[in-house]
Image (cartoon, rainbow, N blue to C red; front, top):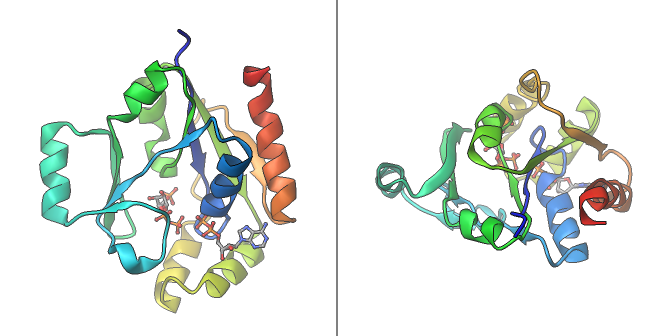
Amino acid sequence: MIPGRFIAVVGPSGVGKDTVMEAVCARHPEIRRVRRVITRSAEAGCEDAEAVTPEEFEAQVRRGDFALHWQAHGMRYGIPASVDAELSAGRDVLANLSRAVLPELEKRFDRSMIVSITASPQVLAARLAARGRETAEEQAKRLQRADFRLAEGLNPVVIRNDGTLDEAVAAFSAALQPERA
Ligand SMILES: Nc1ncnc2c1ncn2[C@@H]1O[C@H](COP(=O)(O)OP(=O)(O)O)[C@@H](O)[C@H]1O
Ligand SMILES: O=P(O)(O)OC[C@H]1O[C@H](OP(=O)(O)OP(=O)(O)O)[C@H](O)[C@@H]1O
């Protein structure tokens, strides 16, 4: 059985990662979206993640429950190691990762793919304001991190999402095809 791919979606806050991933999963029901574990209160109106306290998160780290984990925006994020079972069954999985954790990605999974979603700084600012999930100060902090450079040697598929969502999803779907042909 060929293992599935870990498809990592990355990009600056507000670029549309969650939105694009939701649309891609709707178009490709065979791809599983990973349910992340985050020390963020569930009511923050975000993706369907498992909300835990920092203490619970640390306990899971110590138990080796995560395939990947990282800190960002004053929170901790984890990819459950249970993702290995999906991959071993030949299913592709999709998750939003920090750009900083990508070097670990390729070491941890036999087959991985990086999709880097981009948009102009003006679009990012407008989208974060429209989303209204963070305070103005938090939005400014996220915008400062917008041009974080990916590590050398990675080979991301780059998809622009400053047009319509359908255009970005079509490009994402096309990027998946060669492996799925
Ligand atoms: N192509 C698009 N056109 C217009 N609005 C978009 C587009 N993609 C995403 N959005 C909106 O931009 C905001 C940020 O999208 P989101 O998926 O939360 O970004 P991220 O997960 O990268 O932070 C949301 O309000 C979303 O509805
Ligand atoms: O290191 P970076 O590549 O800048 O990413 C920082 C964080 O932003 C994303 O999380 P989240 O989806 O909670 O934030 P977002 O919706 O604002 O992108 C991503 O999963 C990281 O945890």
